[in-house]
Length: 73
Image (cartoon, rainbow, N blue to C red; front, side):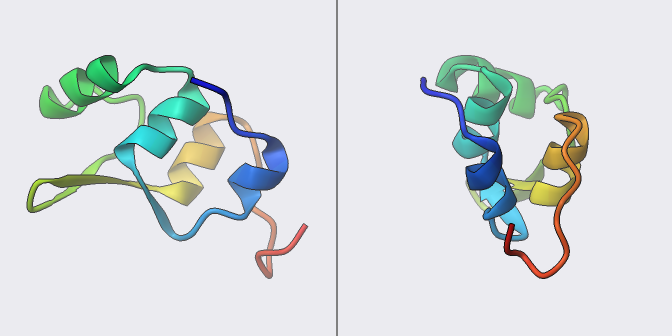
């Protein structure tokens, strides 16, 4: 999977799907779901029905990126 650029990361909404978070962390689809199901994904995962969502601010913090105020770079 191709990684996300800093600009792409900063434009993400309040939550992102598990695969977007996995892509940013360099994880494959299978590994991401395996970790999420075991509660061992590198950052918090919110399960809504069958969907897994990751808070964008926590993902950015894990990656060492500060979210920009106002949402625009």
